[in-house]
Structures are given as C-alpha cells and as structure tokens.
Length: 236
Image: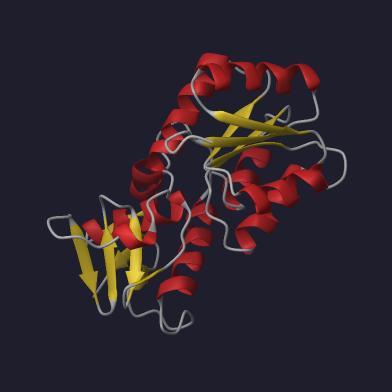
C-alpha cells in the first residue's frame, strides 16, 4: 500500500453493491478490501485497521450494529459509515448512538456516498501520536489535557487519548464554548449537522463516553457539566 493511500474496508453481503463500491472507491484512489460475512468482517476491521469502514447492517453471522458496538467498546476509532435497507428513524438513531459517523439508507446515490466517505476521512483521526503536539498549532489546554484542533488529537500528559471523530467534534464544540451553556439543539447542529437523525439521548450517550475518557470521576464531573433542562457546559 502506498504511503498516502487510505484503506477502506467494505463489509457488505450484496455482491453487486460490494463490487460497485470497490470499483468506484478504487477509482477515487482508495485501497479497498471487501468482506461479505459479519464475523470475518469484524476480524478484518481488527487486523487491517482501515482508515474507514463501510458497514452493512443485515449480514450473515454478526450483524452490523453488533460489529459497530464491539469495535467502539474496544476503543477502535476509525470512522464508520453504516449502510442499510432499514431507513427508519429508530435504526438511524441506533447507528449514531452506537458510534457511527454516518448512516446511509439503501438505495443510495453513489455520488452522495462518495462525498460522505471523503467527509468522514477528512474528520478521521489518522495523525500519528508522535505528531500530536507541535508549536504553532491551535490548542486548548485544561488540567493535564491538550486538545489539538489541527492534529485532531487529545493528549493527557503527552499520551494520546483515543477518540472517535464524533467524540472529538463534540469535545471541541464544548471546549471552544468554554464557560457558555450550549443547548442540545445547538450541539446537535454543530456536531452532527442538519441532515442527521438523532435524539437528545444521542448527545447524552456521547457525553457519557467523553466523561468516561476525560473525567477523573465520571460520576461527579469536573469539566463537563449538565445544565438541567438546557444542555451542557464545559468548565475548566
């Protein structure tokens, strides 16, 4: 694999969709690996550590939501785009709450999917830890943490804290508004954008993840304060 080629893993059991994605993604310059089985797809995601995972929901073996949940619980931070014939709002919310960066319903526009792939890769955490802290970067500091906007990294005492792209965007949204209360509606608009489905619980779940990674005591938050009936505030 060449040094700058992004690797994409496609886990999709529809052979025609899988082939079409491979041809078009390779045409965009990506290195593509495909798999049709959920269990093998999970193992590939672990072993090849792709820069992005395109994941169908209905798969032989483990389904896409199970794979997504497992990878996030293991702390794996590659952007994940969920593909599914299930276009219902509850399925989209489930995907987002489990840590997907995006949810695309079938049938989908190939041009739109490729645009979402490019956007997800732009947001994805591919900067090496050794490059995380440099002079002249735009950073935010609190206690032992440094949030680096350019590198899209969070470090604690020079050690990288692994985060998904969405967790980082939520953290940055709050840190940039330091001391100000942000409503859930404002947070959702800034982090997820106007075209995503979700509920206040989506934000609450991601806040729990941030607290688990960054708070000394997640049950008694020091930095990420809940403002009852409104939203959240970052204090430091």
